[in-house]
Amino acid sequence: MERIPVLTSDGSPTLYHEGAGEHYHSLSGAHLEARQRYVWPCRIVETALLRGRVKILDIGFGLGTNLAWAVHEVQRGAPGATIEIVSLERDLLSLSSLAPHLEALPEARLSVMLRGLVTHLRWRQSGVDLALLVGDATREILNVEAGFDAAFLDPFSPKRNPEPWKVPFLASVRSLMAEGGILSTYSSARSVRCALLRSGWQIGLGPAVGTKSSGTVASAGSVIPPLPPLDEKVRRKLEQRIASVEEEETE
Image: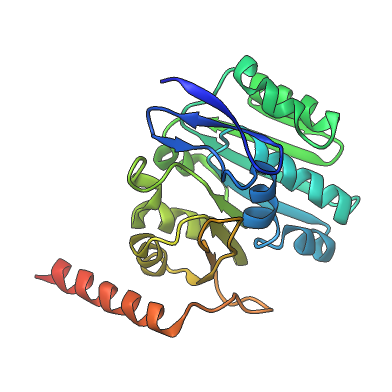
């Protein structure tokens, strides 16, 4: 399927995927979204400062933007901390397709890093350990070792790519998280939030990025400070939907 280059509002590039009918990033800004939707809500810099290391599960490598900004922000905010990232991608793009996006990253060394990762599916250097697993995420997740402090849930939408948004996969991700690990996603769909709750996550209100609605954050156990709470009316509707689904499953 053809992918059409698009320039987002913060000046960073993304692609429009004709087959999915969706952009890889928010049109408010690809780089803006990486920071505000994933890096900051998952508190990866804080974790790296506290523990001297951080381990991240990147679900939907896409153009490599979220991964690159995670490395950039941790190295800037917690120098000396080690970084481990496992990234899942069903449809890995060629280096020629990725080139404009790699060149737009804030540091040239990030482009070198991602080129190495895409070429060899592994990159280890200067305290950074990256692995790229290519294939169906619901199968590749079975090859991943536990202990993640953060998860970036960024596949195409539930309508276009439903499996990563369902209970079995989200429960698998939950089982791989360290206590207090945080997941962030752009989706605020009721079905996704219900699936997260049914998978053992605690959920809260994710940040809004540009003109997009608020996403969802979730934690493996309690966290301090607590996740931003959902509106009480929204939470009641989620509880009602879960009760209805569970009742249907027992019939």
